[in-house]
Length: 227
Image (cartoon, rainbow, N blue to C red; front, side, top):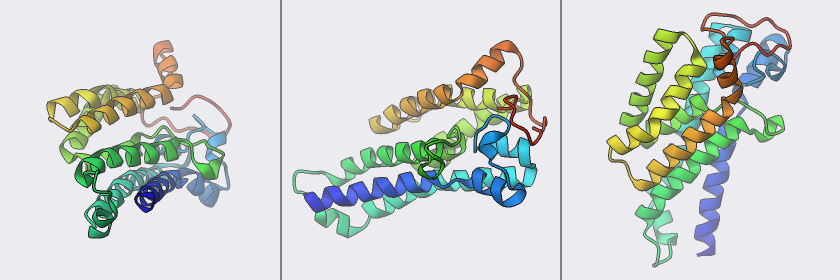
């Protein structure tokens, strides 16, 4: 039982570690010698990188951050399909049922790692891209549906934060409509509330009508005008 719990603990730590990889921060340091957290919205996510450093770094950040979330869930699922994990499980535990809850915990750890990175003094991004990566492996149909909502809202509004919030609000509904397991439904509700909370400054700017639209580039200065 102890070894089983330790193995699960290690998997969750690895999920957090993957989420913590500071993609945007490293690109800011490597390309222009800046701390991305001191510019634009002070986020390490793809949107702030796009506005501060340009399209190339923004796309790289987006891709790597998606892979961080996808990798955390893929690793967890791989471990739970490994016969060694099943052999370590106590007789009173159903590994298949336990696995769905472990997927949820790994997802939350990856998302937490992105927004509260241990390498950046527990700062980071808003977890949208990492959350998308999680969803695409957890349930690709729900992930694509959420991405579709994001794309539609973005094409109409040209505001990334509004698109992210809209997809987050729709996520629990998509889980229910997709008949996903209870564990996934609870995860979607928790993740949705967390993403909305992380976007609170953007919500205030949306309300005030000052939230910038896609294509507006942030200067290399410590301002708070970007999302």
